[in-house]
Amino acid sequence: MARLADRHPDNVDGAWFVDMRCIDCGTCRELVPDLFGETGMQSVVVAQPTDPAAEHRAWLASAACPTASIGRSPRTPRPEHLFPLAVDGPVSDLGHCSEDSFGATSYLVERPDGNLMVDSPVFTRRLIGEVDDRGGIAHVLLTHRDDVADAQQWAERYGARVWIHADDRRAAPYATDVIEGTATADIAPGVSVIPVPGHTRGSVVFLVDDRWLFTGDSLAWSYGHEDLVAFRGACWYSWPEQTRSLDRLADEARFEWVLPGHGARVHLDPDDAHARLRALVRRMQAAA
Ligand code: SF4
Image 1 (cartoon, rainbow, N blue to C red):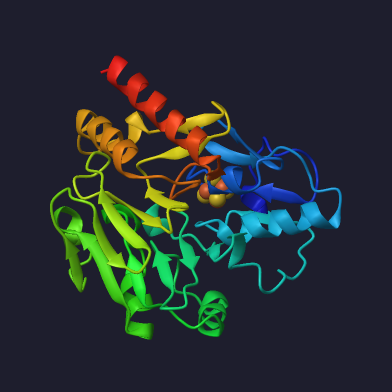
Image 2 (cartoon, protein in one colour):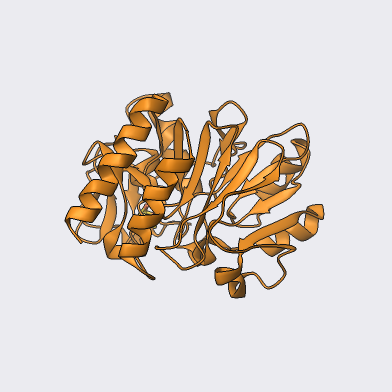
């Protein structure tokens, strides 16, 4: 629950506020950029909701926040069924981000041959019933070591297989399926994994139906740059390696959606997506 006594002084006046426990994960700003912005190294409310739709978006940010830093005064009950939040077709944002993954976004992909969970939200009552209603989870796909969060609890509830790369496996020793090397591999009908070492040594992306690319912290959209970006300041293993990985990704993948853990998601024309990824790689090579 957000703490009114710790309300950040830079919030605009009004009911909604962010408290000083914000860890600057960016999730609220990526999810609801019209209401939340950054000041210093934290987020604040930059515009108060003025209609029911905007109020609903503020509640989404509140439910996604990993530190429960977003609240309103006077308090009103949080609406039920905020997440999963439909993104596109079978893809939903699971919200309920974990502080263990620094607020990374996780996703549910509903599939006739078994649902996918990409990275993990908090294992919370508010979400368990929703996932139950959608048929549970067959595969937990972990993009890298940082975004594991409560994956084990989710996998145990549904008897799901858990996928992670060997080089990040220490974060999920309970994994049932370990991805090796850098070769693209099919892991389920219409689902492939493409290793992209760089952000971490064991980073991978998952491509579903040549449409949805789940990128962890290896590739994202930036509202500020209005383009695809990679996070050099948050590259824990090797920037040159990440550059080569994204170059290889451009060779091997066609996609329309970029769905990251951190950073904004985006839907692009596939040719535009490919051209932007090539251009990003050229910028990374030039800045090496
Ligand atoms: S989601 Fe919460 S922790 Fe993350 S930036 Fe927003 S207020 Fe801060």
